[in-house]
Length: 383
Image (cartoon, rainbow, N blue to C red; front, top):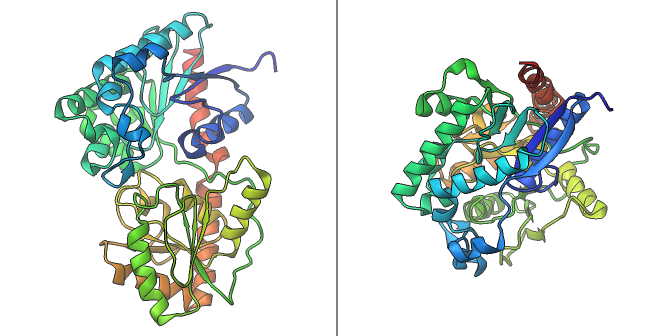
């Protein structure tokens, strides 16, 4: 529509690509387009050839090394998280905006700050740098204390420049207020949505019930701990299976099926993924730190009870003993108990799954999120 208000969508990668920020970016801006905005995408962290000469490349990342249980980043953390790096990308972003008409900017994450006040600025984030540093599992933690301090300082500058800061959870919102000194009335908990349009009918595999794991990084998502718990489950419930999607850990033992990555951009693979959700008895990933966890929403959307660790934003998604189980400690026996409680009691599992589906449908869809955000964007455009 020619008279639709323009909204500049910013993200470190293509904001409309289904893989950016685990699908959050494309879904968010798609929902805002349905609210009547004309979305103009801008990618804010495109490396240029000369960046490679200034220390941008992390050789260990290209060699598939690991850092604190994660795949090592391919961009040098000290290069990316430093104030100098932040200012570099801000200048590039400002150069793009210089050729555009005034419009609100919504960035997914916090990585740039537009200098031109003709562009009302908003951001949406699942966690803060302070929370990431406390977790100690993200690339900023590998950059050293001086760079970490710089990253916190420039993230504060971004927050201060925002008309509103949208967070996926109350957990993230409290950090923006308490750790960065941002007034609470400028922080809005928007939530997030499941990256599924319509779930398939629930058809639980009752003959061979399985626990579903979906994650690209087996170690970081708590796969080894889940496998340890699953061995205990199988010793008491031999029919149980563990189905692993998204990665290919080298596991060869009874009851474990490694499906590997399934690309949502390929219709047949997307259909296979959704079928696995629809037939699963239980869903589990056990990350030490999970800023939000869109996969929990997807499991709930398909009516699958979740067993995961407590902490972070997870209690805002999963209602303990109602839509799944939140295990307080990284104890394989306790995790196994939660899984067994679901696998061995189909009636309970059905009630939990129904409650999960209801909760996600009521609170965690992208139209719900867009309806919360859109009024602030319209006010920013008109202000």
